[in-house]
Amino acid sequence: MRRHGPEALVWRRRVAILAGAILTGLVALLFAHLSDLAGETFLHIVARWWWAPLVASPLGFAGIVWLTRQLAPAAAGSGIPQVMAASRDPDHGLDRLISARTVIVKFVLTIAAVLFGASVGREGPTVQLSAAIMGYAHRMLAIPLRASVYIAGGAAGVAAAFNTPLAGIAFAIEELDAAYEQRMSLLVMAAVLIAGMVSLGLAGDYVYFGVMRQTLRVREAMIAAPVAGFLGGLAGGIFSRLMLTAGATVWAPMARLRKKPVLLTGACGFVVAITGVATGLTWGTGYQTANAVIAGADVPLWFGGAKLVATLATAISGLPGGIFAPSLSVGAGIGDMLRSVFPGYPPGAVVLLGMIAYFTGVVRAPLTAVIIISETTASRGLLLPLFATALIADFAAQLVCKERLYHGLSRRFETRPSPAEDMPAGRR
Picture 1: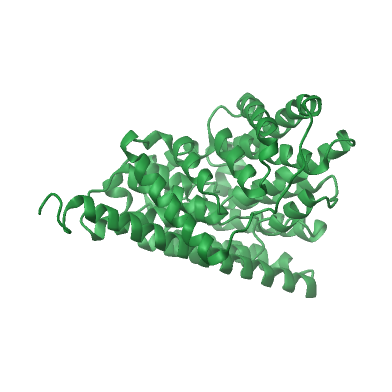
Picture 2: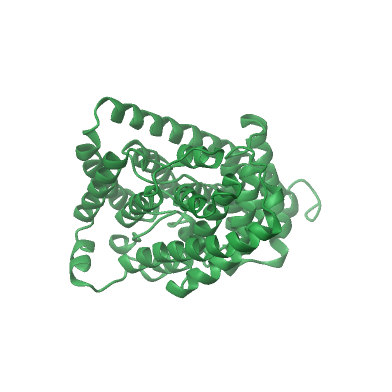
């Protein structure tokens, strides 16, 4: 009975996985709904008072960062670096980096960041929320915490956020590989599939960016993939380099600003506001703009650069929120520029090459990037060009940024135990 009865460890572990994955799917859907509602509310305000962000965004950014530092410093930024750091110390990770207090603050303040026009996504925060849910499910049932518990939760969060089960599994293996265990594979797959089924059952069978059926001929792919991969990878590597440098540089002006985080955040908020008011396109996740570009709509050639500036300013500010969706939006802008370079090529396919190149350059996870793009656009006919572009982009990004973004950010949580110093300069 102790080994195989209803109170046995194996059964308690299965109950924890099932309960954690179901709750992850529900929380991810709620998070998505509230984030979308906050973004729509902000756009309605801007449509009525175009000047409002010039006042509201800097003040809102500063207030959110002040609350983050006071309530839960580990809630700052993406959430993925926190999960990585927690997986290296599973017993204590749940006490601070992904504690209940931290993820509740993360949930509320990420939505608040969207409400003030920040260029953030919800996917990174969903990973942190999901890892915490899975951790508490195991703790409540007196199951020893292992790194695999947090990884399974984070992977389930990716699957639920994008409705992409395969991407969740790839993310667990590729991006959280520092804590990967061979015996965790069943745990990850079970959590991902259950969370994905919950999301699918409640939200329906949808494709995140809509179905894209265009393909590239071999000759077109051999020309476009290297160009897109190199340019997009360099841009993504520059973004990562700037994010990592902003939190560690000894350059006197930046070092002084880091000692006054609320002032730094207000300045970043003003940059985001100026960029958004001037362009009208860089607010929020950028999902709608990216979706429109994939479908064939034109955006100004400067959109990708403007969105990169807004995302970088938001990330440096230390606001809770991720960079997945904004990075895909920047990549769509790069893809739109490439359409003018390859005017005779299928436009939607070229846009996807730009998206995957920039996204890979930022996160340095080519397999995850390929699966996310292919699942969120149902573009299975482009798998080989997407893989080639991602591999080239990964190489190009290394030329300007040797360190992988999330791994670099995660080390700051391990080396800065003081709450006052716990907040990184970047996010997801």
